Image 1 (cartoon, rainbow, N blue to C red):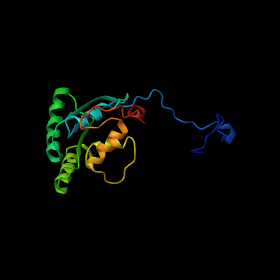
Image 2 (image 1 turned 90 degrees about the vertical axis):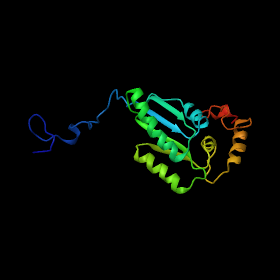
Image 3 (image 1 turned 30 degrees about the vertical axis):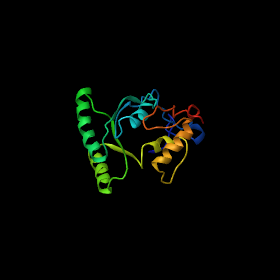
Length: 180
């Protein structure tokens, strides 16, 4: 009688004698802690945004660098920076990201930046047109194109003070702090 549950006397058990099914339980599971490298186009805005995140226990460490470069030149610089930081830290980053704007660059240059980043093991995040759309998306869903000037107007309305590029920001993770 292969496959049947049997009692000590070798007789098959009745369904009510088998007991509840055994469900495996994982106790004291430890989630892996990740390290992040984020290399941004802008020197201030993007860096300030990412540094404002509150890291969870799953984040071991992170570095955010604002380089003041765009698309392809940023990705090339990111490859060099990651290698340099790996040596300094004596450890690689678990995740490396390149963050840049779509701007008005030719599609060929923009696509080449994404391709190179992915070939080099980077993840890519980009905004269309400017990074400020990330701020706006904390408050409202937007599915249509918005001009840079409208970003400024909408952020001024949301923050309750005139928004300027690289100005200090309220706590985006608690909208009540931004006048909501």
